[in-house]
Length: 396
Image (cartoon, rainbow, N blue to C red; front, top):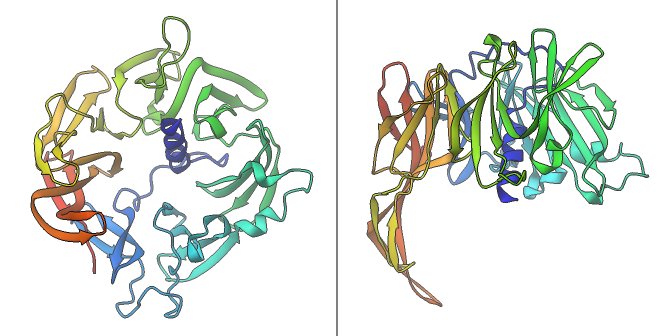
């Protein structure tokens, strides 16, 4: 279940939908990674440039303390929520006191520096009919061109949903069974089936062209799709394979390429580690556990030796041949497989290192605690040159 929830969270970040024709990647998304950084100990949104290895706060005022008292537009920004780029602006949630379900949806214009509020979750909740109980939970997310707010029934089907245009703030009540397309191929819109909204798994993909609807890959339990190669008619997707008894193995995943013209469904990788990948050119990039991980040292707090389970290796597999190879190997860096990004020609993957040879002893009511030196940061791999560089996490 944890894996499914993680996939759902990832899905909310990757869906480009809202029924619009999919546009080419914006130059901004091929230049910067939206992230956050510490400024005087306060989380603030920032831009990481992999070509230069620099991280800079989006709030460019050097005297700003990033607090409400200082009038910083990002005061209350919650670092656990992702930043989103659309239409020349950065969209984010501002939740005073960390109450995410009471947050405001904010727009920051990168050209003018002006901040405006699109809407707030309490305002949207007031539009839900009294006959629909919201205690069953709510979900919400940013999509290209819109913000969507949903309320489920007790059986997890959708009871009510609103769409808010990021362009003009127009609010539209959607049919309860309307599923927002995640991509457009020629005149066809592609949507996940309704189950994905709350279970994290879709039974196939619904393809619509005008009034005509059909479901492709209906026997597949699809976790997520990647549309980077869709212009050439290739849909990359990750699914949970079937067991011999007909049930699905949610502890395993596989990567496929589906040809939108011929209907050919080809397996690329069997027994894949996760749904977190970066897709550039002909290659899928990812990190996974290795068989003989290098030692990181002895952890006095846990009373055991710790290992770099990733091996510091970034793997890649050819979409055409299915052949796996090593993009880079840095045993000193503990890579985080869930934090991998494609920024233009660069693969950016985060690392979290602990130096078990250096520590400070801290007295606690439960005994001595060994505070080890830690370093977080990002490794950048240039797929064009093959060059690899590591950049420690920035702070000011």
